[in-house]
Length: 369
Image (cartoon, rainbow, N blue to C red):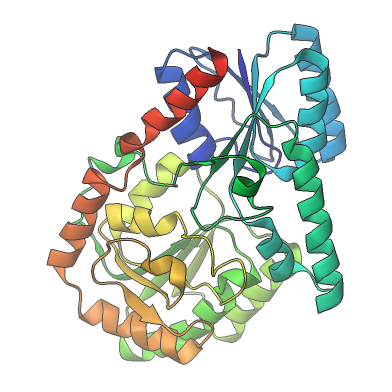
C-alpha cells in the first residue's frame, strides 16, 4: 500500500491527484490518500481510499491523526509527501514501520521565504539558512526526490547524492483532447490560481479600466482562492473603487476538471505575476493549460515564461499596470490562430503528462522491488 499525504493542497490538485495518483492507479498500485482541506470531496474509488480532514485542524493535529491510522494499519510500504511541513511526520513513519519516503518538491522554498517574509534582509537570510538546514537533516531519511521544475534548488540535492526526478506540471491528455479552441467568448480574459499580492491580481484589476476604454466589451474572470481575507478585501475594494463590477467577476476555487470548460471559452489567458524571487524561478502550470485551451497568453517578461517552445506569447513589464493594459489590448486585437494551433499541438505531442508519466511508475517500481 502507498500513502500519499498533503496538508495544504485541494484534494483534486492537478499534480497530486489528476496526474500522479491516477497514474499510480492505472499502474495497478493501491493508494491511500490523506488531505487536509476545506473542500469536503471524497475521491475514493477502485484502488484508492481518500480521507480528507478539515483544515481547521492544525498541521500538528492532522499529522498525529494520520500517523496513528498508518501505524494501526501497518500496511504502508511507501510514503509520498508534498510539503515540507510534513518532514517530522515522514521521519516518524519511517522510524516506526520502515516505509520508503518520496519527497515531492513543488517549489524553491528559500525563494518563498524571500518573497513572503516581512523581516529585514539579515533575518530573511537566517530564516533561509535554518530552512535549508532542516531540509538537509530530513534528506537523511529520504529515498527519492521528485521536483516540479529544473530551476528548483533548495538545499542542493545533487551535492547530497540525489538525482532528483524531474516531473513537470504538464496537463493530462484526459482534459485536452476534446477542447475546441475555436469556441471563444469575444474579448474575454481569464486568470485562475492562487490570489495573493505576488500574483499581481491588484495590478491586473487596475489595468482593466484602461483596457475597457479601448475595448468596451472586454471582461475579466478570476477563479481561485484568496490566501488571506485582508487581500480579498483589498481586491474587492479595488474593483468597487474602479467601478469594475460589471466587467470583472470573482469566482471561488472550482474543481480542476471543471476549469477546462472555462479556459476553452476564453480568448486571453493572463499571468499577471509581479517580479519576485518566487516568480523568477517556477514556470506556472497555467501557461501549458492556456496553450492546450487555445488561449492567447499574456505574461510577464520573466525567465520562467521563456523556457519552452511557445508561439505568440505577449510580454508585459512585470508590475507595470500601463504595460499590462497595453499588451492585453494588443493581444485581443492581434490573435494569430496559427500560433494558437501550434501551441495546442505542442501540448498534445510534447508538453503533456502522458509523455512523462512512465517515469513515476518506474520510480515506484524501483523503490518497491
